[in-house]
Amino acid sequence: MKTEDITTIQKLLMSWYLKHHRKLPWRETTNPYHIWVSEVMLQQTQVKTVIPYYKKFLASFPDIQSLANTDIQLVLKRWEGLGYYARARNLHRAAMIVLNDHNGIIPEKYADFRKLPGVGDYIAAAVLSFAFGCPHPVVDGNVKRVLARLCLISQPTNKPASYPIFKTIAGKLLDMKNPGNFNQAVMELGALICKPKNPNCDTCPLQRFCMASQAGSVEEYPKRIKSKPIPQHHIAVGIVLKNDKILITRRKIDGLLGGLWEFPGGEVKPYETPEAACIREIKEEVNLEVGIDSFVKRIKHAYTHFKIVMDVFICCFVSGRIHLSGPEDFKWIKISEMDRFPFPKSNHKIFPHLLKSINQASRK
Image (tube, rainbow, N blue to C red):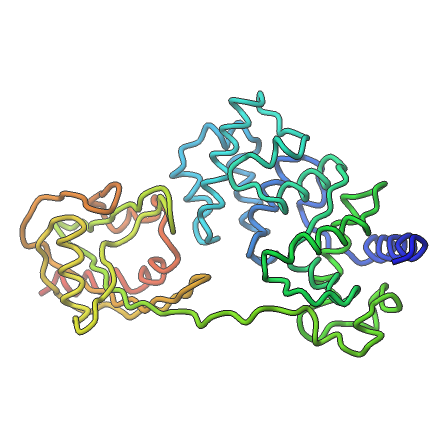
């Protein structure tokens, strides 16, 4: 692409962005911590979902010191419902490192910031360009889509080996005088105009430079490798009742849903009934003998790489003393105390049906 074309693209895109960009709370600040929080939350999550979480999170943890000095359980509680909880755990760990190793000041050097937990190339480039004006090109899904159409890039956007190609082109287009706003402009163009389906090409400021538009092949880009079918798992969990309290267990801090509380249970084996699986899993996880009292609800929930069908049962305590094998901790709590603990969204789907089922079990 010619130098004069790049300069024109920069001017057209910046002019469009200044007129049409969405007013978002993290765009109204240059505070690197606030911008960092927003970018972590925005990973794989829609803007409209993030906004209320962003505001509540910063109300609880207004600066990096307050986040670093807070127990991870409270951090997870504030993150509850947003999903991808490793983001919260990594952000908390990173805040502690910044406080202890960098005197509470977020490093401006790319290499130093990139070393922090949860900070990949995208987060590093976004935060440093938005907050400090550092000339690092941002490459996310929106940017890849814009570049694939603009330059007819045939490499699949979801193939890791393609990333350097998109980063190189993004770097060549980057406005070095205003890298933060330019990065946001490309991302905003992808979000509002150059959408995955039915892009608004007629209103795109870059249409005359877009090779896909000129070739009439916009819908053919970006290229993607076809994803494998998402597997589905059958889960059985038990609400174990004992002396008007219910049993909850906490998952180990690392891994899927790490640090969250849940009702004990696990996967139903082939040729095993959900009831039998519930009893077996509770015995294996916490060493309790329980009986099935009643069926509560079948819950369906989708994660990024798999889906679950979860059968939920009210269980009566029979015998045993708790010995953990898998969970990190346990508590016997009153049902009124559940809102004190961070639970996965799949467990939240149980809550509306829980009180009625427990009351029915208690009357038997």
